[in-house]
Amino acid sequence: MKLRTTLTIELSKMLAQRGTYVGCVVLGVLTGLLVWGIWRLGPPVELQRAVGERFVIGGKVVTGPLIPLLLLEFPVTLHLLIPLLVATIAGGLVAGEKRAGTLRTLMTRPVPRASLLAGKLLAGWLYAVGLVAFLGLFSGLVGYLVFGRGDLVVMSFHGSTFGILAEPQALIRLALGYALAAVAMMAIASPGLLLSTICDNPLTATGLTIAILFVCQALGLIPYFKWLEPYLLTEYISVYHEAFASTIDWAQVASSTKYLAAYIVVPAIAALLIFQRRDVLC
Amino acid sequence: MSEELVIETEGLSKRYGRTWALREVDLRVERGQVYGLLGPNGAGKSTSIRVLTGLVGPTAGRARLFGRPVGARRHAAGGVVGVAVEQPALYSYLSGRENLGMLAALSGGVSERAIAEALELVGLRGREDDKVSTYSHGMRRRLYLAQALLPEPELLILDEPASGLDPRGLVLVRDLLHRLNEQRGVTIFLSSHLLHEVEQLCTHLAIIAGGRVVAQGPVEELLSGAQVRLEVYTNNPRRALSLVGAYHGVEQARAGPKVVELYCRPYAVADINEMLVGEGLRVFGLIPHHETLEDLYMRLTEDNEAAHDADN
Image 1 (cartoon, rainbow over the protein chains, first blue to last red):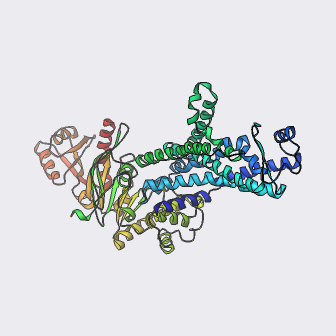
Image 2 (cartoon, rainbow over the protein chains, first blue to last red):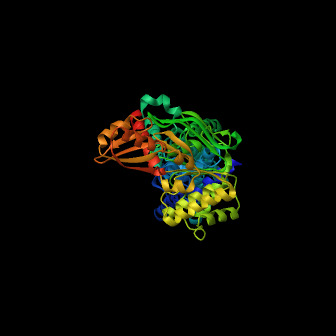
Image 3 (cartoon, rainbow over the protein chains, first blue to last red):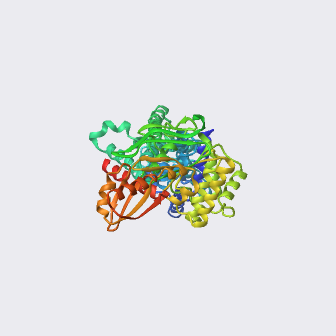
């Protein structure tokens, strides 16, 4: 009961703030720019080159389902833009209230601290999921409106994967890909919330969350730290790739999801323990 | 009787790093009292309230609300305690009504009527649907007080409730607290550094300085048992100073060119006069000033603040 109340309150607060919608606006603009570019100039060069060198395809290369896929594949979308937006919201969940003083108002109400934090945590996860879902639905909608129906030409920008998925199968794969991307973004929200409980400044919490991602990425590139690779969060952000393989490697999906789940759960428990014990001095 | 105790602390202490903010504070607030915690800035008033409301945990000692321990950094008394700690902290992007509805929901929820009544009590009807960001400081302060009134509390814990209010707001809040106490029997525990406010509102008070309670009890009792500030006009103030300085019960004696000032019990005035005359001094006048709350406060806090600074 208390958890439902705290979650409802957190979501109401989130929805009442303009900042919450910045992410949707940014992703909407990004989608618009991509669609405008393809509409005016044709498919991305990489796609044209990859397709043109190997096959002659009759019909449309660019169809409605391609737009959500291109946005997922966009290097900045899941590795910078959405993580930044998620980290901003998650970093402000506790630290923002500390800074505004409203945390003490909340915490003098007769509600267990665990419920309060759980409400915030669920709201942070829902924001991450919502943002990814918005991107998928909005880009799909715009894609269909501009380019119409059709099969999905699947290719990796690295050129390792190429295939054509029939439209119904394409939609299922897109849903799976976006679901996996959403889980990856939840794995960013949790450390964001943990840092938010530790820091008094939301900007510090956000900055540290992003710094962790960059450090993970950097460690993955340094040969001396190759042994760390399986434990780095950034290694699993691109788990959605699996959804577009010719045959889905479910074992790989399960393994990646397991690590992401650890990144979701462990910081959440740590945040809970810290939040339970911490003096509220703001 | 112990079941009548609404707030009880025993040896309550709190240390931040190396600084003791509270030291062995014992408070006893009974049902129906309006209890003021009076002290200068940094004396430990807010820390006391933070411990009582579960915002911070004590380093040592115990605190109980309605006989139930305040522990695990959350107050145990649930929705029967209304709290307003320090500066009004509300959601500026929400309206006054939305703020109250949201905070009341955390206490189990209240009806729209109860929210309207709380807004009426603090004089904010007509502005309830405006965003808090458009409120003045005084209005925010009153809205903050309104959230403490939801749902109907048996105990109100208020930290500096009059801070930042204009004269009209001050009167409104004072009258409101009086009414809540007299008509609904709400026990009120408030901190303040405003002597006038405490004198007008409180039935009981504790004076806190340097993290320690230096006096507590019913206001009238504290003042009746207080000392008098005595001005002694004599032909030889220096000699008079050395004589009264040795007299038992005389405190803070100091001599000016024509007068000796000292603090003593009221009954000692006649003895001091007799002693000075007996020693051959001419006494032109003895003027006792009965100690006001301000005198008491100044005398008690001065010494303890100095001691606290030395300790830390």
